[in-house]
Length: 121
Length: 290
Image (cartoon, rainbow over all chains, first blue to last red; front, side):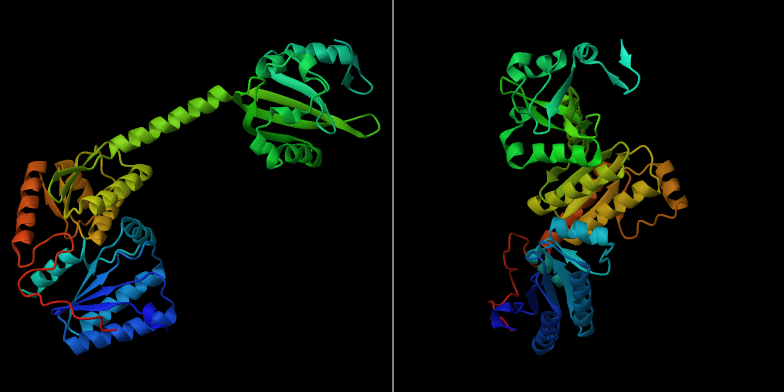
């Protein structure tokens, strides 16, 4: 995988911001899973923002990837907030019957950050 | 009317009399290449050409240039010949260049020896109907638009008063509108007021919860208001669980709750703003880790 294809993971204090990109193949997903889990454990992050505003379309594959990532992050002791879901993506998720009720969501990264602080308090 | 019983065909003069009596329908004969052989009153009224002007011309003069380019005319004649009949609709041109919505039926004609000699083309003006249909569709769209209003009532608070029956078309439009507004207004709270919904059945409840779920996915919280006693009874009897969604009896109660939720959010440690970094305990960005 080329370096520029890597999903950016940015540290914001005790939190991590992960900007998901749309075109993920199986290998990229595995790479992302290992990057994120390693980053969470190395930085001892208490919260992770999965930022989806870069996704304009979604399918069940990506939806499963997101749910899996959230599960891994939680196992590592960090909270997860999914932010920036676009209207079209939300509608697709509803149509696919993927409610993601178990995931916390916020409108944007700032709101997500607020929510992470709230959860921790 | 004299009729040749042996071949079942009508003698030519009577045929012309018959088709001329059709004043609002064009019935014309074409040869195999589409050259116009006969003309009737209906054709003259519809297209504005007299018989003298039209006969001898190719039927292609009635087609819009882009349709000719795409080979529409050849396709129509070909299909008529292949399957014994072509029926279709589309825009055609009058002599003055104006267009009308034509309902066209083309049938092939064979002579006594089974030789293909041409086509009979029957055309009716359906412009009024198509314009009526379009008007109806436009009005339907407008009503849909009007019936799913989303109002921003306060900073980051949207109100969606739902009035009337919620069918699946309206519900889809409603969800779409609401989610778009959540994104554009950066709304944190959505109040769905259902006091104007006459009846909540399973389908309506499902639509409602899909909408709430969609808002939730985008990070906006929903408050339901205006649940009437009979609605509450019906929902519980139907086994509809509203889960963690908050409900208030009136819109004003829901608004109060919304204000409280907003102020709780904004009084928390990080400021909520457009991409602004939370203040306080936020160190500078460190580089990408991946």
